[in-house]
Length: 580
Image (cartoon, rainbow, N blue to C red; front, top):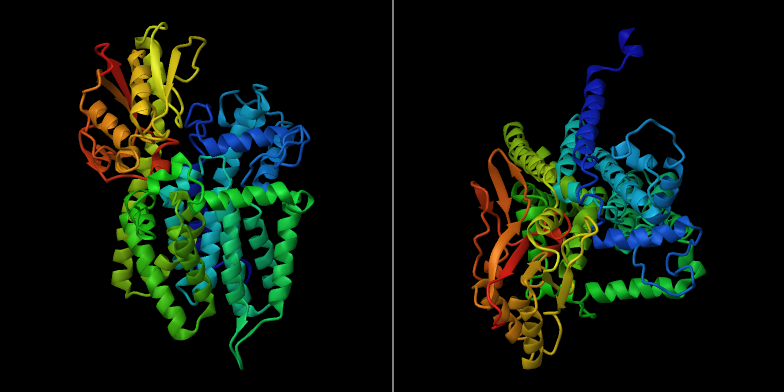
């Protein structure tokens, strides 16, 4: 009688495990929504917020300004519309929340402008998407594994994503990447279901989720490959299932219903996608992507995952698992695992070989890699299975805690700005570099005279160098907000021979400027700090930064991994007026 009316112990444990998993994921993602003190220091987030303001005021076409002028908006409409709708709904909730609390910011207790309000709404939605991605990963893993091991297998895969630093970091940014990862993972789960059951419902859901993924960001178009494989039948002959057409139709419908201006105003929509493709493939030479000169296709992506975005244990398990899953899918003709392997391979081949290799581009593929890692571990003998699980989860958890602990400290741009206001007189002039945000931030009404220099400009000749040095001769301080320029230009010495020499002289103390102070925050836990030291890679003399005791240098990090939430700020002070 008891068993007929009450869930058994295994079911209770499974539900409890999922609750713990989601709670852990949320605890790592929702706190520290003010990681930049509300200054909107992520440029992609800022770009989205400017468009969201217009949408909130009734101008629904993100590809045109309210005046009708075309503008470049390279992201999907769906996260944008959901952000604006959520902001509208939340602002109508009346709760006794402190204006500066997370709740107060979401319901806009302080009656902030829409730009500020939507900043926190977008970040909360991003954290929600990514928390739900953990659940979607567990669902995907559960569909793939049969027998009694499927619960622990699902929890392991979901646990890896919940602890993935790449996901934790991007969950704090109000961008479209986390929405793409969420809908892509749901699409994969539905595709696996379609491959298993051949049901129309599964095919329809696969199309819907894939359409919403593309409606979030163009990378989702790669889901066409595993979608086709999921509908490939091999008995008695190789042919495409009739339900593929149904899945494709629902894919197109889901995309167009959430991205209406792709059809209503196709020219600026196509222009935005084409421009984004041109940038990512290196056909447009924008300075902020020149850091990828000389990077090795695919290897660079995996190296950054191992060093920074996932950590070495997770990365090793992920690619061991991908190899295992590929062999298993090939040997047993298992289309379910083939769907997952195809998705991972599509990401590595396309994103890993294009010019721009931002680590966040691999975000929608991390859940599938986590499933492969969990599958490989689950296929081992019990003792080895336990050892591998602990050997991957424990250091990944430690890294996740270390990364989140970083947010307890102020953003380096905020800390540097406060120091500038306290230590540099208002009549001083501060040199700043184009293509990077000038400091100090507008923390109060005091202003400084900024002198802008453009080391990325070309041609790199004597006239450019003379103009650069003349500008610096008028500055009392030089503030480098990040390594965006000095981390890249000296590695392009053939293109920038004179500017490379300038940076070498600056870091060697030979330009009339002396290193004054650095501002930073890095992942830290139990007395260990993980730092990326950008100087040696660029061939520059390392500065006496004053890293914390116990600091471990994990090697060069991709600029986009550090520049948004933990850049290294360098302040130089003029010690003479020679300008030489």
